[in-house]
Length: 464
Image (tube, rainbow, N blue to C red):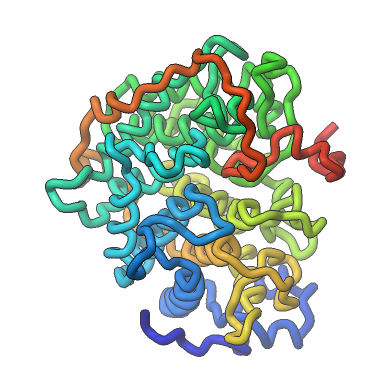
């Protein structure tokens, strides 16, 4: 990789309104962090180049003897797929393709024997959400016209379709009237849990496949997932709660709220709004989702994104650190399929990007990003892939108006699909649940009720 540009301890150039929004930060704080002019593409590209470079210091899958598509401990498999999604966005927004070969290598290495991201060496960490994060990255590659894999390899669109097909087969009506379980395999802790992120990822993929292919079947599934998520009580007044247990017929809703749950449904709803020609139903849903995300922004400084369930309390874990990346990613992407959202979304993105740039002031380089953006250049002392990914996504989202809308198979798409892909990856969710427990699994849909009651107060996660 090229040497990192020297970006530490330089002033942040902000438009006047953004500066006013961040007056809570002292003059001394404004002298640290990454240089970022919110209205200058060259400045944004330079800042995101630094953030991406610092993020990729954690990745060793391209080194001799290591496994492509894996991050080292403590990162779970899903987060590498999510990181590749950020790198796909990075290339799409900036045109800097220095990581493209690495992304293609890693995403193809992890497809599994049936080309559906069911990788045998990840059975102990495979949730429906985990598999789905890889599929969403593949779908982004198709939508963004990312270079196709070699012809003898699985193609981006077909990979997303394969994951959709495997998950449709897992739709479980035996408990809770439908829905996907969190875990795929009976021997994993969490198999008895149905969560919002697993179903939200499935909804997201279905909606985007409907728009990309024009196939009504995908749209019908998106409607079905939305209706079930709402009916089971995981969506209440457009608050997205974490999930519930099949053993209690999903009557024990865990009311923790994460940014990425709102985000994954937002982009799905935006695609359904587009697919249906701007239907009033989907616009109402989309507007209400966006309005309720106000809970994920600080009042002072205003409009700065935070992971409200853990960030104010210093309790975020390795997975949580990355969640803001996905809300930023999906909010920005929503504006390309529902353009009327642009002004409202960018108000949040601009304030959050400015604050994130200030927080990227840690480490020996003075450029490592923390997660508590509301603290400005008062570095919070945390480092990791999630922190870098979150900062990268919110900063590069500043460029959303400078890129084209996602393509479809009728508007310039180049990725080959296979509607029957994934048929070999069947799984019967009605099989009896194994009693084997795995204590060390805390995947992308983290924090079941068991975890929540283990001494962590939960009242601040809930709404009345």
